[in-house]
Image 1 (tube, one colour):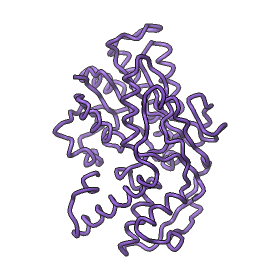
Image 2 (cartoon, rainbow, N blue to C red; image 1 turned 45 degrees about the horizontal axis):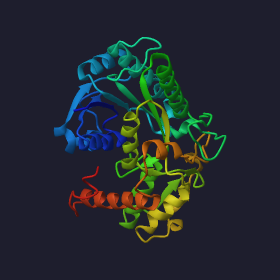
Image 3 (cartoon, helix red, strand yellow; image 1 turned 180 degrees about the vertical axis):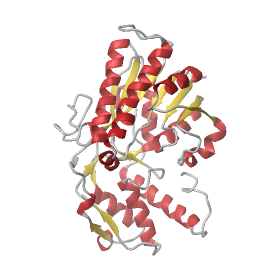
Image 4 (cartoon, rainbow, N blue to C red; image 1 turned 135 degrees about the vertical axis):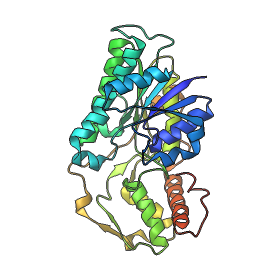
Length: 343
């Protein structure tokens, strides 16, 4: 039985990945910074099947101890300060967690594995997955973006992710470490935090349809993203570590949609005209906007055999329906089934 260690296990991606690996027969460990993590509810239904170890991406010694205790076959580093606007407010912390945290985890694996420079990848070596991001491309030099697109990040988050991406590649080349980066484009789900724009939209549409809210304030409706379903994307993570040799892969749908498209689909799902409820607030725009992100996932499709199964409109409707069920439950008018369970 393979053993996997996941950082960020209580996040959106971590919860879906834990489910997926358990279904594939893995023994799954989650790294927790503390037992009082407020997002543990995302994995409560999995708790009986998961194991936990304490560790902190800010503390090198705790990571070494965690890797040594778990002795994983695979490590998935999903932990980060991932909300881009917050990275402008907490720039130093973003750099420490999202950037330097990757280096600390790589060092922990190197120390526990006893790796030295220029060694060949051992068949029994710990395999490492780094969650890179399309935000590394930022001010894009080409459309669509693939594994060879030059990074040009436009936020502290994007800069930190770029460091994590490049240091992972450096450890792969310097120590023969099996280290792969998944350059994931935007991926959402009913488990997305309410601070993210897609979840902000889906929850507002649900609340407005129930008469609990009247307006939705948004910033740049013209920002374009390549949006997919998080449950699809975690499958690509496992496939990357199942390859004969480590590499980097762009993961996305290859289709672009604007924030305006997301709003339209969400409000149509509850039979409302979005233009009657959405107001523009320029204070919600980024200091440096990223306007056009679109994946070229040809390598992932060809080498991994990966394909997304949920399209954009299905994704947005799924999120609205889950929020409707969640709100009904909060109001005591519904059950905790369906979308509520998915949280």
